[in-house]
Length: 190
Picture 1 (tube, rainbow, N blue to C red):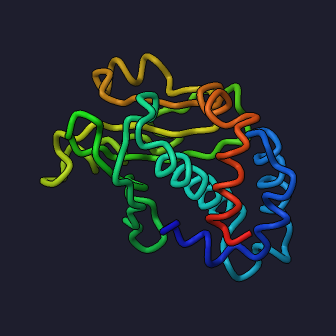
Picture 2 (picture 1 turned 90 degrees about the horizontal axis):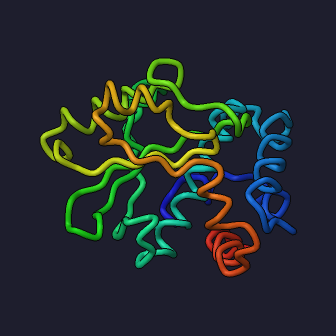
C-alpha cells in the first residue's frame, strides 16, 4: 500500500479486526474518527474517514486488476492537496482500454444520500481531471460510501463522464469477501 494511512493509522487492529463487511468497516471508521486519542494532532475526524476509505479503495483496486467492474490497473494514490484543501484527484491508474483513469474517493456516513456537485466538491474532481494536460481525456470514477452521484448532476453537468461505485456496489465487491479483507489487513501490517 502506498497511501499514507498505512503509516499514520494509530491502531489498524482496532480498525480491521473482525471486519468482513463494508458496514462494519464504516462503523469502526465512524467510531474511531470521533476518538480524540486517535485524531488529536494527526487529522480531523473527516480527514481520518477520508484517508481510511482511500486506503480501502487502493487495496480494492490493486487487488482486483482484472475485475471489469473496477476497470483500473497500475493504481497510485495522488496527493494533490494545497494548503490542506483537496484539489480533486485522489488517485489514478489506467483503464482496461489503455486510457488514463482518475479516481475520487468520498466517505459519507449516510449511505442513502446522493453526492452533489457543490456540497461534495465533485466539480473539483471533474475540473482537475478535464483541465489537466495529463488527465484531460481520462476516464473518471468516484468510489463512495454514499448512495450515488446525483443523476441530474452527472448527466447535466458532467455529460455522464463520471462513473460511480456507490455503497451498494462496494457492498457487492467486499461483503463476505474474505480474501479482500485479509489483503487489507496484510497491507496495513496485520
